[in-house]
Length: 235
Image 1 (tube, one colour):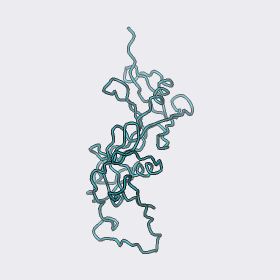
Image 2: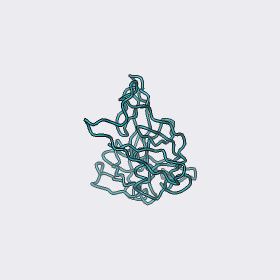
Image 3: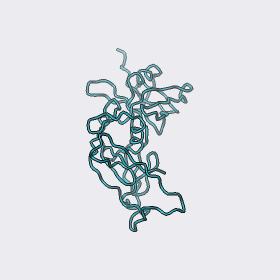
Image 4: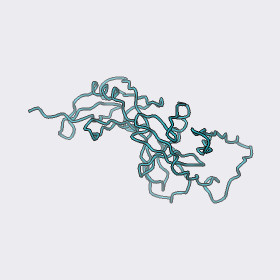
């Protein structure tokens, strides 16, 4: 298991993460456990605003400069979390820092269709090469942008549902895609905005369905119908 250190010296233009390999079982650790903390680990250090931004087109910036190394972007994206208040953070067991996201953190740049009918599978690929199949756990939604254009999104990494019970323990982080442990607050997931050509492909595959007495236009994937829009009644 590796740990990503977010802190970088002020002299660096782009953060260079340090990967720290955890010692093998049976070997002593350089950092002894600390009593009173879950698992012997102290709570993550709050770094505040990292001056890191994910632009609407999916590009990552640090202190105004683009991060051009794809491998580095993927590494940061692997520890990206979204808090209940909608803010985005890079979170490691040791540190956490806030990042700015202009729209969605990912872009769906391609879609493939397998099968047909209600059980067909719509498989999306993001700009960071994550593969997601639309369905009950990865829902599609379409909002209306300020200019009236459709704004489609797909859930890439599901969030966590709150569970009542034990009091939350400081420093305890749940993993994306897993059910929250008792006492953990609900967290929204991470979405990808569909690139316009991808959305147009969905429209080509769409069909009309009657939902709650209203005609709606959408697509099926993994047995779930996703609305892309409503059809105007013929006059």
